[in-house]
Every structure is written in structure tokens, then in C-alpha cells.
Length: 174
Ligand SMILES: [Zn+2]
Image 1 (tube, rainbow, N blue to C red):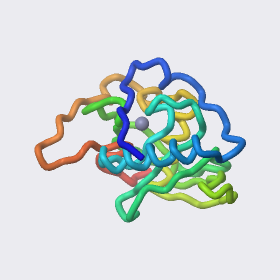
Image 2 (spheres, rainbow, N blue to C red; image 1 turned 90 degrees about the horizontal axis):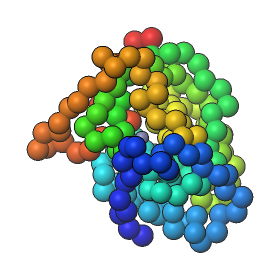
Image 3 (cartoon, protein in one colour; image 1 turned 120 degrees about the vertical axis):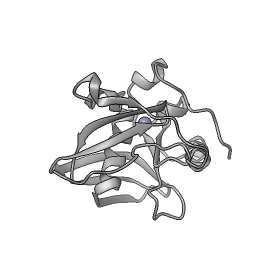
């Protein structure tokens, strides 16, 4: 278990598609631990395996009300609805944010660390985090959803703020 370096854009692995996990073996458990530890250390909302250099379909998400990150294996969005404008960032793009559209809510399915199949309904920030992290598994980055360059901006964090993945402020207007 360890915090590992987060790859930054334009690292080529961020543009590659991650492979499905067929068996949750020790290497996948280690990957899950590294994702959790690195996410906690970075103070982000989510992290995908590509971002730490591993092309397997595993993500970690921790929204502010969660006591610790949750690992999702082979996550897929099976339904999405609505549209809302959000301000979003990414641990692979330090201090860069964009204004883009995400869904209001969605349904996600996948597997947990014990190979148990789950289906869940995600709203707001959680839905946004799933969309952002599953995009990573497909080599898609948040900048791809930013309609024009004027909607990208830099923001240097102050001394009290932590690195933020997936969201700065959430605007729930549709
Ligand atoms: Zn990201």
C-alpha cells in the first residue's frame, strides 16, 4: 500500500483504453490499495488506474461525505439523464479547470473488491465522478468535453486548499 505518482497530461497512458479485469487477484488488490492511498493523499474525488500507469478498469471514488474511497472494478454507465454545467478539474492537470456539461444522474454497474456485482444510482457529484473516471478508462479526458478554450482556466490553490479532482464548485443548473 502506497501513494504512487499521478501521471500528468500529456502522458500517453492517459490516452489509452484500460482492459477489463477478469479476476480479482493480488495484483488487482494492490492496484486498488494504491489507488485508494494515492487518492486520499491527493485530496481528490476520484482516481482511475490509467492515472497511476496501469491499464486495468479500476477506479477509486471518495466524495466528501464518504469516510474512505470506494473501489469500483469494470464500472460502466448503463443509463444517464439530464445535463448540468460543472466546473471540473483533474489530478493529471494540476491547477487547470474547465466548464463542461455532465449528467444529472446515472445508473452504474460493476464489481466491488470481493467480486460482487453491484448496480447503483448516482446523482450530482457522484455521477460526475463516475463519468470523469470511466472516461479515463476509455482514454477520454475532461478537456475533451470543454466546448471551447475560453472555458478552460487556471486556478492556483491557496495554502489551505488541497488538490481537487473532478470538481471545484458544482453548479446544479440544468
Ligand atoms: Zn481525472
